[in-house]
View 1 (cartoon, rainbow over the protein chains, first blue to last red):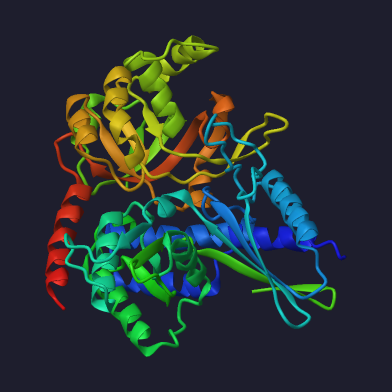
View 2 (view 1 turned 135 degrees about the vertical axis):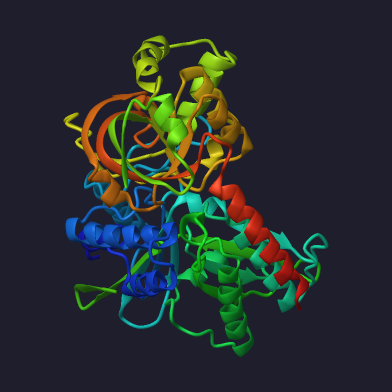
Length: 290
Length: 207
């Protein structure tokens, strides 16, 4: 089996230091929405300078390089055990190279492992066998500040007046954005999952964040809700960093899962503006990145 | 942008108002979750006896914090092997987690400036009025840019807390931040929370 440690290291470097073009474009559009001289505009200008500097110097966009979450889709014949070992080796080297901050802490004794490894869930690696010849690895780095403001609702929710329908989903998502204020490094991107159980719902709310910011949901109802939620979240006026302003979220992505008759969960994963996700495709012995 | 030198006098602190951009120069300490809990448990509430190098560290940080600045930051640091430390990425972390501790720490050590992101609550705002002090908001995620204002790493305490949680003593030049909570009881965060709550209520009333 081929050794992918080096190409995976490059994937980590790209994810941590080079903000994807769709996110950068959205931030550049957002600057124009804010009042000249406002703290909101100033913070977006600082963000864009930082993005350029991080890319030029190969240094992390944000010091919180998050939980590395890998999704590996592999053709028949690859060993997931060996792939996991290669991913771990790349993570250790990325930490030595200062692309990643040592972020894996033992919850019982508080010790930081120092190399971003620890247990079966750090880093998080999902494997799926696929047809065809290409192996792809998606990587997302999601920091703790935005992870902490994620929220899960069980509908109906009488306090918010949210029933078991898309109107109810809209209400709880707006509630989550209000509660987050600037804590999750607004402007954020909302990953929303409707249904599932508590675990699968949160999982799907993160997975949907791999979509491109400017794509449209194939389900017309969800597509309309995505647009409406982005617009209404921006009416809240929380603004970049919570300073007040026109840009509170850059986009909303919604997915749905089957649920039990008794359960109706809505999970919101809040992604900070430092929306770090990259894909590596390995085919014919060579890696390409997007 | 107004230049502020650390340590900061009470007069300067009281002259700072919400919304004012500042550039900080001087020596500051990073400190976040583990540090705040350690300070409060060991030296303020004294629910845990000092152990290891606790007392030495206290003696070293106390003069720095008196009139000084604490920065909620867990940096990416290069040179860990050689101890020739250099900050590579050093943006602020979310401050609200320190809300149970911050006011106590400000009063005990006479900390005049707290830097972080996302703002803090009423306990910290009350301490800002008393001490007096200010909360300074740095741009979250602007880690490579902010690291460039860290001219030197002068030392580190409690490295056994881990790199992100340790207390790094750093020299900064023109560190950029905005005053979002001042010594006169004003908080930009309380204002935005209230205004956005009104809009939320209107939106929730719609179908």
